[in-house]
Length: 327
View 1 (cartoon, one colour):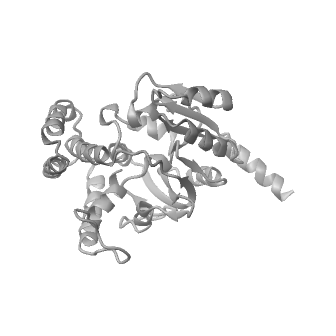
View 2 (view 1 turned 180 degrees about the vertical axis):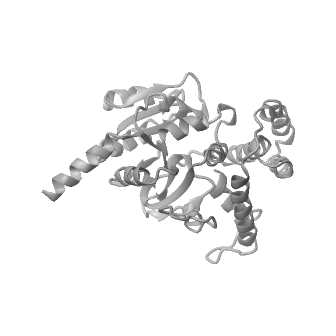
View 3 (view 1 turned 45 degrees about the vertical axis):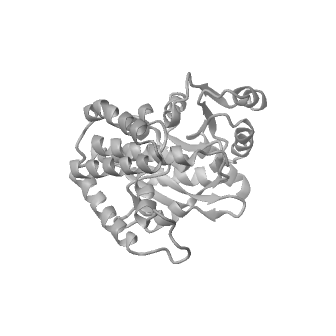
């Protein structure tokens, strides 16, 4: 009887939350992720945003799981492909994941309960367990120790979140405008996070929500570093104080120089300032105050080398924390 009541509660929660999955040219990975998502006791609606895959991703997913809704983007939109998925979501809440991440059973039901109980929360960030070992992602460990005042929130208050491991109020995502396609991918969450906070909603880390992540080995780390640097600079000019925007721009130039792409990427970043400055809006003082707390915490972390392993050349605790606050 108790098991039946629990199943009914999970199904009721599942009717109020959808899962949006972003994918590009990873047919096998996507099929495995969809198998796991379809087995969830909450049985949520699943929407896949396919970023113009050129392999058999769409064909195989459609044949194997005809109940999954697949949205085909006309071209690779990067993170903005998630916006296309949201166009098909009519539930109050939406959970995001990528083709190499999936939600653990019970997490979506817990997310619904928390968001029902706390209307001030706009975004919940889950704990990510990485690989077969299930080790907690390092960024999540930093989120657990956020310096921000959590008040009566059910978890640590955050200034950012991780796009592939979060649950949004659907209306909050739409109000923030979703992801800007011009940022493509890499730190694209920061702009959305700042606008969510500016709109008066909290972002909260919830250790009880679990996402599993089996990272794909096919990654262009150098390209991602350059895009993270460029997007940090652009976001700075769109929302942050001029001094911080300038410092981010200088750091981006330094990254491009290290990657031997200074002329190509530097010029492209400067050209982008034409549209970036048109998007500039000042953040409320409350959000700026949150950022000052985060920055003080960053400086403290920068002076403390991690106890378990030496820092790599060019790496700092500040860089790690910035990923928590702005990725």
